[in-house]
Image (cartoon, rainbow, N blue to C red; front, side):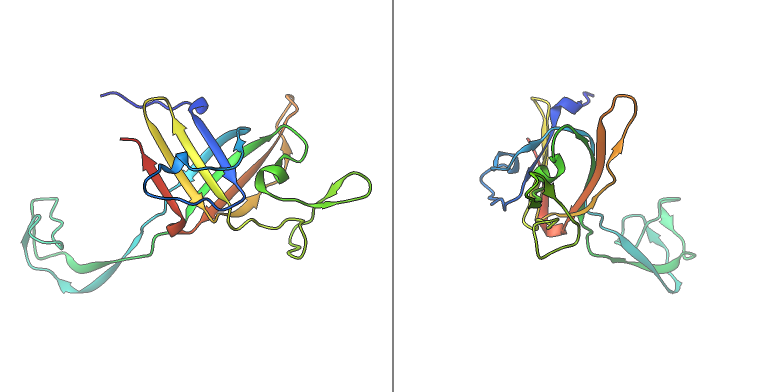
Length: 201
């Protein structure tokens, strides 16, 4: 069996600070996004989890043949004997989409440019940033931003789009060793309804 191999050079993350309009006719990776963030070491995409909770009920069930109905899991012998306690599964709502990664800082104010943070200009030809001040441009969170994760090795292509994303963490900027560059961890999430994946047939 052939194994699809996608190397780091086949992956790209593109971010837009403005809303992206999606339609069924066009693939999500062919829509117009903003700038490409190429200075990433890794990314981890978490697809929404659809968990369920088991509720135990009174009594034990009658004997059933495997596959006879939705309540017959008799994988041990093919027949469920009347010794298993009755139970039901209650599905929970699907969780959010999540994306985590590490950005290698290569230039002036890269985080602010890539994430759409404008800051406040000062007379000393610098730009000042603060966190939590929603009345200014200091660290406003872009609520209509869109992220595209595109994996394309030339023959196979998988893409995930997250829109209306919320940046939950822009981590501590830290040096990584004698090579001298700095990196920062980030994570973002969006609602279940605001994410999708698309596979090339």
